[in-house]
Image (cartoon, rainbow, N blue to C red; front, top):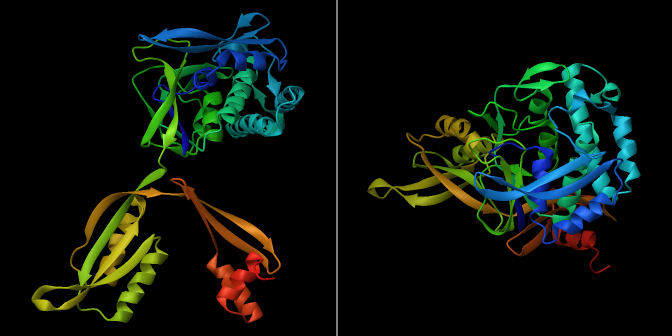
Amino acid sequence: MKTLYLDCSMGAAGDMLVAALLELLPDRQSFVNRFNALGIPGVTVSAEPAVKCGVTGTHFRVSVNGAEEDEHHHEHHHHHSGMHDITQIVESMRLDPAVEADVLAVYRSIAEAESQVHGEPIEQIHFHEVGTMDAIADVTAVCLLMHELSPDAVIASPVNVGGGTVHCAHGILPVPAPATALLLRDIPMYGGTIQSELCTPTGAALLRRFVTKFGAMPLMRGAAYGYGMGKKDFEQANCVRAILGESEGETEEIIELSCDVDDMTGEEIGFAAERLFELGARDVYTMPVQMKKGRPGVLLRVLCMPEQREALVEAIFRHTTTLGVREARLRRHVMERSIETLDTPCGQVRRKTATGYGVERGKLEYEDLARVARERNISLAEARRLVSGENE
């Protein structure tokens, strides 16, 4: 599976993300030339070598009317743009519809965050930190590069937001700035010893749009590496690192809970299993085992996600006679799953698809097939053939 991993241990800003992704392309100058041909008013971009802590990477330089801007301070000397202005500029570039949709979605997410922070309607929001042409260039470039690289999965590390304060149009605010904090909701983030804004609103919105999972780097074979350098210098290399390669598929941690019982009826065990499923267990099953003194017993095994462990352990003690529950932490390989709804002669039927590890398989949803079979008074096999259009 083609996987893109983003190391955000020094945060994320628009220009750093562009530069990191740009380094993954075999012909960077060709992209720069095509980008400059888009005709963003007054904007010219270039990819320049930059060195941080002895590591060579790329700085994505955006010049607006001949001058380079700083994303953190440009609100002081530029016209503030609203969502309507941004939309007009983006539509004038005549981008691929999918890319244009991504660019506008990124800006819309920023507008929603600013709207919530300031208590104003989205239509009245002005993009102080991200509204100028250099930020439009950064957002558009990332969206174009994501489509050009077209990874199957985008995974990012937890985001270092930095610390201290940041100067914004409304005054001095704590890091992360309120809008950035909202854009990072439900995304793992942390602060550090560096007293500077490491994750900008632009960076946060781009991560929110494209990253499918946040966590450790998966098991993967790296084919290309990119280092997108920021403007500031710190003790740690100020860059976003991008790794593009092949992963064997997604892995996740799963908990296995188990216990042995020899003094419960079949009905009691069945009831316990029902309750465990209701509490979110991924799977519950039993196996016959031989216990002390040759007594026949039952092994109850429950699979669950880590966050469900405590509730399920408590339920096992409540609904079984066991005096102890064993726990094992396992890592399982999982295929990517999706559900699509098909319009068939028998009405809408859901189809589950799983892909990964060079395999793709699909299966019609049992409940939907059972409905068709009951409605037409036919067997499940006949319903499957009918829905699939076989033997008509």
